Image (cartoon, rainbow, N blue to C red; front, top):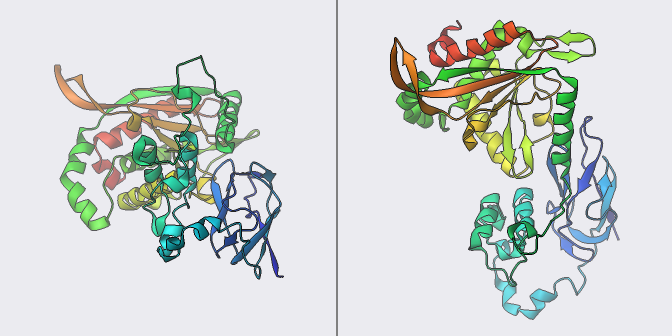
Length: 398
């Protein structure tokens, strides 16, 4: 007998504990090296715990839903044992199953995001055909399944929220991420003197520039040319002019940051996450677009790292992707300001005494009035507006 312990992954200094989700294997079952055994949810990310070696799972020390800390023992593997006869019973009943490809056996593996969606919809992972590597069920597979693509062996029980009969209620505990987001938003409103200033920007110049170069840009850089990178560049230009917008409060001190780490709010199946574009002032438009696209993909699968979600000196929240016309974004502490972007819509505006139709976007910047005066906030937002309405200014640094 050779026993190996499975431990909780190392958590960051800002994350003291985590919650176990659901074990994918039970005692007595054989496991392969690097096979994902359980997901560990922190208030920022979901970490996958792989098997350090092949063998048999002989003991689960911490069950589903347990609260754990770094380095705690989760389970034990016997690297020399063989699986019990009960575990592969299903395979014994169907001799032909032994001839199926190895990838077919791994169809029950699913990403954390996919597992969450399927669990909410009452669909078994094993009833979904995975399209990911080695048959892994992806978020897209799970979304398709909930729309009826899956064929479960038994009709799943619909969530109470989908039924209007009998005035049902459904109590669901907050995830660690949702609870942490709630805590930080409440903290922001309690500790900051939040004020929001608004302005509108004519997006025609950016839209024309994007239309002219989007095809060659994608061919050259392998990523689509979006709008967020222009907002990032415009924000950095304004932060350089008005450094207080990029500062933070520490007790009775103001910390001025000589770098520009821009948080980009991203929606995920687990809730809102804000990965950080480090040194955004040193990144090209293409590099920004690549990082944002990468953040979006990995946010859906819960693959963002703790380091990528920690820090930041200023944030950008784009409610426009969901159709928002106007909002007052809440500061992400310990930052002191945040830019809210909204949907670009054609609206009538007055130019040179005439009413014309232009693609307009309302910008909103919330700021901590304890250290940022209205003058700096308003001028900072005006600087962003001017950079977006005349994007060549970004190239000339004016």
